[in-house]
Amino acid sequence: MLQTDIIQALPDITRFLSWQRLRRATARALQFVDRCKAGRGLREGTHAISRRRTQKTDKNDPNWRQTLKKVKKIDKTIHTSANEKKFVLLEARLYVQAVHEQLHHAGVEATTNEVRQRLWVLRMRPTILSVIKSCLRCRIRRATPGEPPTGNLPAARLAYHQRPFSYGGLDYFEPYNVTIGRQHQKRYVALFTCLTTRAVHLEVAGGLSADNAILAIRRMMARRVAPVEI
Image (cartoon, rainbow, N blue to C red; front, side, top):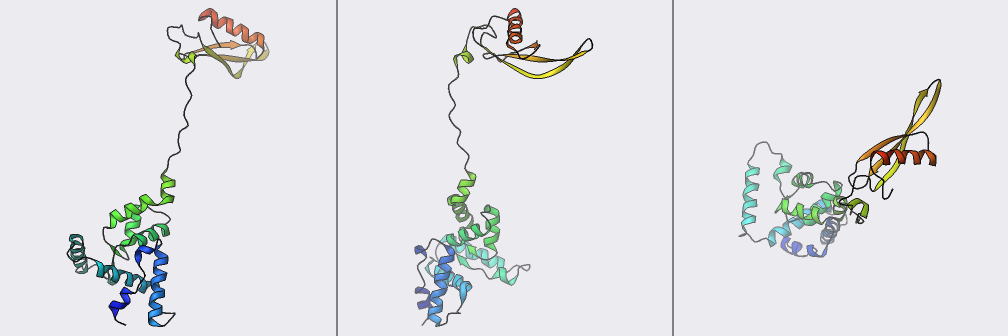
């Protein structure tokens, strides 16, 4: 069987959604051709896919010519290893997806560096950007949680032409120890807040009972205004 017939007998790339499955199917086809189960393996399957892609490429394509010029320039460099000079030309969307998953869904730069160590992919960066953009796990990781809709403001927050503390709230914060004569007693601080202007008024309360709360409210009313709603 001629080399051209072997390349034509390889599986169709468009029928596969996974790089690993494409490599296995190509390796199986080569094993069948060679009549040997321990044939060329996955690495030879990768080169066979590349050869088939090279045969189907239009040699007059400007992108193809530009890629060949880059390969020739790199091949002439001194500080380049033998493995780096043996470029495999491939339009490898499935391969880029496999490398992206092997790197635990790394970014564009990490995926690009890993792919360039083994293959020379046509339109590499746009392909990697497209793969990462369409990756479901990366899309889930980049997603931002939706903000729940907020409710409408109450009428007290929008009370125009009203004196401060007409609509307010009351709360207490931690007790303080005070000395009266020879006794140590606790005193609380009543915190009045205006719902419209967000102003704050503080009053000392003798305790947390209802009588002490009423006394604190009366002192606040004497300084501010009688509240419409608390």
